[in-house]
Length: 400
Ligand SMILES: Nc1nc2c(ncn2[C@@H]2O[C@H](COP(=O)(O)OP(=O)(O)OP(=O)(O)O)[C@@H](O)[C@H]2O)c(=O)[nH]1
Ligand SMILES: [K+]
Ligand SMILES: [Mg+2]
Image (cartoon, rainbow, N blue to C red; front, side, top):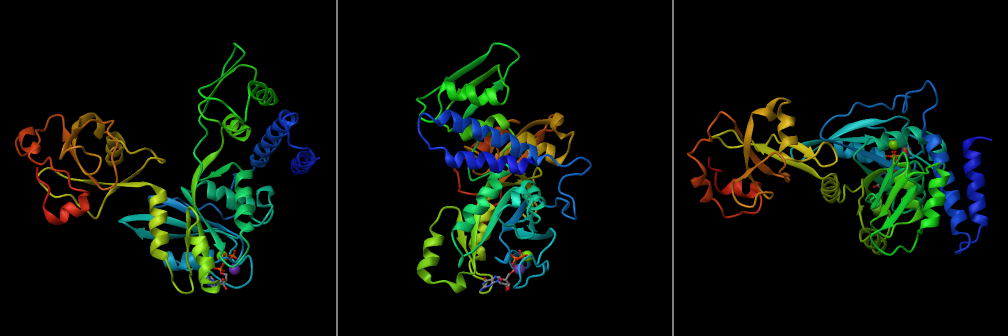
């Protein structure tokens, strides 16, 4: 029996089993069995390199965004409109057959947008080009799930389920469960609060299913058995997802209003070029990019050319910033001066561990050099805290 058949069989058994206190251990065990099989399913077949089939697109820019959706929801139309790169669009399904990259220029950063073939129910098990599409979405920083506003809301659930089946977790943070395998000592199970979904016995049973007999488990929130399995599997990818409802030109205003009010959702119309600003702003926010402007001593920063950092990709500390500029810079740095929302006063003397925020300005003071402008005394006179550097910059030049 193949892996997919085994999964189907267990799913059928779960559907047959009534959910109550007596069956929860058995159901938990079945969930773990499915999770193990799905992980097996994700292992690329021997001799292949994962995505394959013309789907490997070189990463470019400061972030990567994938367009995921059913066929003919308007993904290619959207790519063409947002990036200027032409991607064939047509009224028949599966017009797009590979991965087509384009670039969005936004807030002085470059974001790679990927158009992909439509996916359908069963994609996670290899239907259509599902596996390749999913591999590409895993390589991106956020997902735009494109939906046809005139079609059933069920599409969103189906797609979410397909992505979950391959270990993607949308708009969720990792469960607050500490888990560490040990060599000896048995299983220690603890929690910092009262648990309503998982008890010691269920946890043991799940671990047993994974043949783990020595481990430390600490629940820091009232997590579910699915959360526990995610933590044990350890291969989940937590990603932001924006639900993009396209084609609002064909539905009524009340329905548009309802969709627009849902969390993480934007309504657009490619035909009417409607609401792209809002979509781009949401996308930008979800990516959490941090632009940092370098200020040479005695000069104004170049506000058109930021160093772009991200908490998910490499981090946002002063150290990450320095490493971004030059690999060997860090050993020469004495401290840095920071202006912007991360600074408590202007400028703030910061060490390597300081976490920078979007639109901060940083001046590096090297070990041998003396900061120009004659010492700390004069910085203190700048202790009023304007909102953001970009506003401030327009009014008065930054001194030092
Ligand atoms: N009414 C309306 N139609 C749209 C809109 N955007 C796209 N379409 C139409 O929807 C159809 C499908 O568009 P595509 O861009 O090819 O869709 P896709 O999601 O890339 O489709 P596949 O590549 O086949 O998965 C085309 O006929 C588009 O003209 C819109 O905002 N409103
Ligand atoms: K199409
Ligand atoms: Mg397309």
